[in-house]
Image (cartoon, rainbow, N blue to C red; front, side):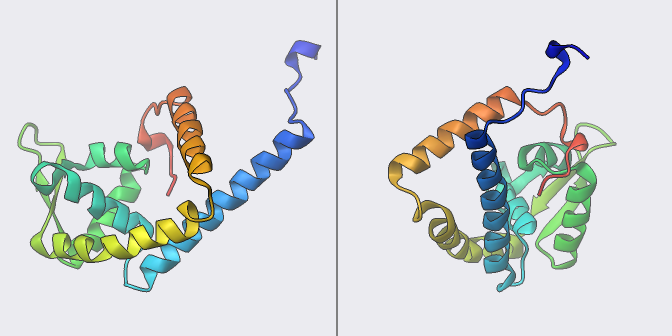
Length: 162
């Protein structure tokens, strides 16, 4: 194995930053999920109905939703089934082909997401925005946009992030 085949190991500073990112991002997800769970919904469920609420007429193909929220299609299908049982969404055949499925936000789902929006934004502020300076928050957004630009998804089917 030549020098060119060796991994580019992280420096001590890079390792420290990487571990801080891992721990911080996981703790953030847990905190956001916990705040929503107190109101009977998980973070992935909220994210799905929130994205639907912003879609034209509250409708979106499930495959497009999966790509947008970076979850596998099977995870979105399971989440949609839970939300459908609560009466917050409906699944309909896609009008342009018989294989696709469109997820539709119901009036009850819209009311739920509107009620949860204040809780979620307060949680985001408390756990992410307020601990940072405005400059750090802008830098974080810039950094994550660079990561996103460097790693376009080949398809959400390959990822199971939540």
